[in-house]
Image (cartoon, rainbow, N blue to C red; front, side, top):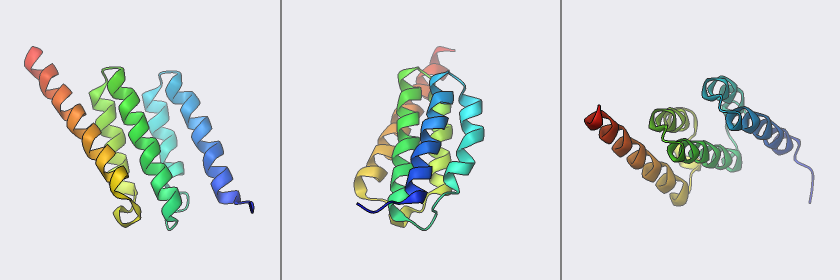
Length: 112
């Protein structure tokens, strides 16, 4: 398989960002994401990987009962990833996670 330096740089950046997220630093993660969003904006495969990664951050935030951060990750995806690059599965996962996060925020609001 031929080398793809841009894709390799993308993977390396995701790994670095993921370390910050796993350390519990959502704000630090959000500060690092614009550089990831800027990578390969015209490459459908990288758009798909970005969408899936941001959805995974949203899901992991939901699992930590942090629906606000989940929404922020999904908003970033909506703002920076070309919809015409996405496959139905990726659109669906973002919609599903947004629905879950919105529901959780409503429930939290009803409690407080």
